[in-house]
Image (cartoon, rainbow, N blue to C red; front, side, top):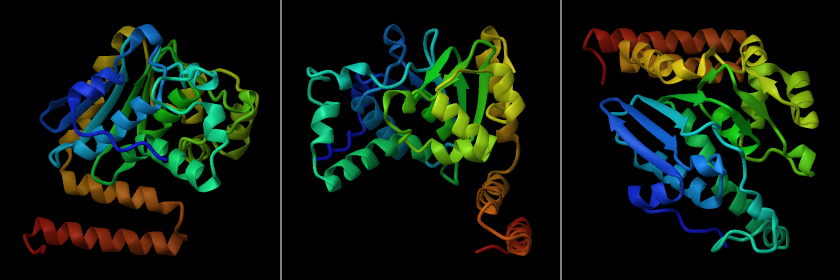
Length: 268
């Protein structure tokens, strides 16, 4: 059976390796198990999903960061051992479950990776060191990525005989294109900061010591624009890939009409 959703308890979140800090219209979500290189577990995923559900409506920008030398070393390898992680099903137990159970369980895991692109938020991943597998996909879940010059992305799932299943394949293709995405996933090779910026995987690369400051500056710039204009613009861009040119022009007109009426005090 799928594990129950984690209640909104910051103390439990931190025990699972996640800390939330609120500062006005900005939320900072920190992976806080640096000694384990922020290896991910189902408990961490439940905590991340709970954080997303608990954010106050005043939050406009969410920053995802990590303590230590690595953003995230990926899935806790204990999941692949017979002993597993206490209280969690290991890989063999999940593999033996019915299809519906497997589907529901993975869907629950994916919730930790999907809420970052909500229409009312802009999310920024601040990524340093290694971002492997689930760590790579968590960074891909965000709208924007600022990376340290020492960053090393890798999608290792295929090398382990698996596939990336934490909602990372679509944003990866949208960012770097099908051919490069296939090559990155199928080989499991490392992608450094220079390539990440050149291919659109990252928006900006900075020295590691400047990562937090660069993300703060980007968050401030995002907060400078009126919220409703940012929301409408994000919706236009998110939907553009599924619309024809004429459909996109129509969506632009409708969005602009809403904005003009709102600014003129004629909105609903």
